[in-house]
Length: 158
Image (cartoon, rainbow, N blue to C red; front, side, top):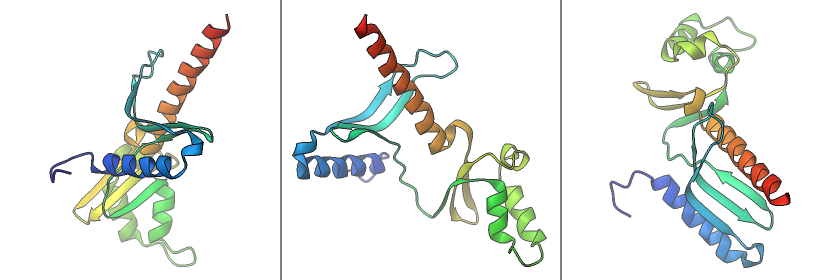
């Protein structure tokens, strides 16, 4: 694999899925990598799926990330604040102020919105919310896939 390959995580995921397919041939794996789903909903654009596996056990969708550092997945602002604010102690106001200053405005305003955050270093913190959040990406792709399957089933029955 070339050193500058940017989809390293997707490549590794594909290799692992292929190994599973080879190990369990009776499950009849069909692996689709870098699949684009055409959306029929104007509110939701076409979706890209890193990996879709169709086998005897079901249909599985994978969103692959190759991140380093600490990853806080599917958390809310209040949950992060509770990490720097001991339940029985006094609020650590400096830590709370620092934490909220690092988060995007939308996250600090909407205490209950979940997001994903990676901390590679104190100077390198990334927050993924809205459609950049991997959970939202999979949910939207799943809805698009579900609509496509429903549409195909409905039209093939008539």
